[in-house]
Length: 158
Length: 158
Length: 158
Length: 158
Image (cartoon, rainbow over all chains, first blue to last red; front, side, top):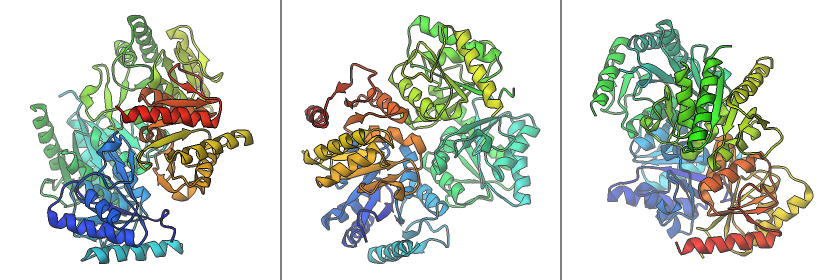
C-alpha cells in the first residue's frame, strides 16, 4: 500500500470530553501504524486528538481547514489546507478520504456522515451517528481502523 | 413581510414516489401563498415538485444547482444558480435559507439536515430524518409551512 | 427572450469614485430596460450602483455574496445568495452569468475576468482590464449592454 | 524554516511547450532544495513539471484538484486533494500558498493571479501575466524561487 495515496478520513467534533479525546488519539495511532495518511478538519477536539495520535507513531496528517489562516490548524497537522469555505469545507474532507471513521460527533459530523453515504464512501462509526445500515459499527479504536483498512483493501481491487 | 427577502428552503431527494411528490407540491403552494420565496437545489423529485407547487400559486423559486449548466434546473425554477460545486452546493442552500423544511429525503438531505442544525437554522421535518430534538415535526404540508412561518416571524424580532 | 433565464453578470470593485458609480448605474438601467436579469457580487461600489440602476427601471437583481449574512447585500439586491465562500464566490458569479460586463475594477475583478475567459463566457469591458483580444471593448454603458445583448442572442441559436 | 509549514504555490497552464515544461521543472527542483513544500493544481503541463522537479530533489508536493478523483493527479503529486469544485478550486491554491510563482499560463492562471493580488499574497512572475507593479518579475527559475524565499522570510517576521 502506498501510504501517501491512501487517506483515512476522521470526522468528529471540535471539542470533546477526555474519554473521547483518548479514543480519537488511539485511532490516530492505529492509522499511522497502518501507514495510511490521516485527513481531517484540522481543528481541535477529535481532530486534534487523532492528529496527535498519528504523529506519536510517525504518521502523516492533513487538515482541511474552514478558515483562511493555516495557523488555526492544531499543532499536529503536517499539511494544513486553509480553504476559506467555512462549513463548506466538510465535503472536501469526505471527497478526499478513501474511507472515513466517525468518532462521536455533533451536527457538523452529521453533515459529513450524510456526504459520505451520499458519495458512497465506506464509513465506520465509533460511537457516532447511527443513521444507516450502511455504516460499519466499531467498538474500539483498533477495530475501527481494522474495518477501515479492510475497506481500503477492497478498493484496491476495484 | 418582504417576500423577496424571506427564503424558505426545501430539501429532499432528486427522485421520489408520487405521494411524496404530491406532498412537496403542496408545500410549494403553501410557501407561495405565504408570499415567501422558495429556495432549493433546483433539480428533480422533491425539488421539482415544490417548485411546481410554488409556481402554480404565483410564487418565486430559486434553484442552487450542483452543475455548471442552468438548463439542468427543473422547469419551475425562476432563478437558477449553477455553482459547479457538486454536492458542495448543499451548504449554500442551507446558508441562504432563513428556515428549512425537509421532505422525506436521502443522504444528500441528511447532509443538509446536519448543516441546518450546525448553523442554527430552524428546521421542520415532514417525514424526513429524525435525528435531533431541535427538529420541528410536521404531519401535513400546511402544518410544515405554518411552523416555518412561525420561525420566520421570530427571526424578524431578533 | 425569457427575462428570468438570461443573466447579465456585472463585475467591478466594491468601492469606486462617483463617475464610475454613475456609469455602473447606467449599465444597470440598460440591463433592466432590455429585460435581462442582473447578477453580481451584491456588495457596494460598482455592484451597488448597477443594482440601483436596474431597480430604477424595474429590473431584477441577484447578488452572490461572499459572507454568510444576507444583510450584507446592498439595498438594491432582490435575491441575495449568501455563500460563505469568501472570494471563492467569484467563480459562481461567472458560472451563473450568460455574458459579463466588467466595469473598471480591481484585483477581485481580475480574478473574475480570468474565470470568464477560462470558461468561455462572452466578456465586455467598460474601462476594465485589457488583458485579452477576446474581450469586447465598450465606450459607453449603452454600448456595453448592446454588446452583451448581441452575445446573448448568439447564445440562443447555439 | 519548518518545511511542512511553508508552502510555495506554483500556478500555470495544464499544457505547455517543452521549454516551459523545463523551466517549471527547474522551479520545482529549486523549491525542493530550499526545503519548502510545493502546492499547485495537481494536473499536467506546468503543474506536472514543477512536481516532477520537486520530487527529483526529494521535495514534498500537494495537488489541489478540480475533480472528484485523486487519480487525475499527475504522478508526482504526494498529497492529492480532490475538491470537486472545478475551477472554483483555484482560490484554494492561492489561499493555501504563502507565496506564489506564476509560470507562463493561460486564463486559469490569470484568475489565480487576480486572487493572489486580491488576497495580498506575494507573487513572482516567470514569464506570466504582467498586470500589476506588485508582481515581482524573475528571469530564471533560480531567481524566481529566490524571490519567493525572500518573501517567505519577510512573512516570518510579521
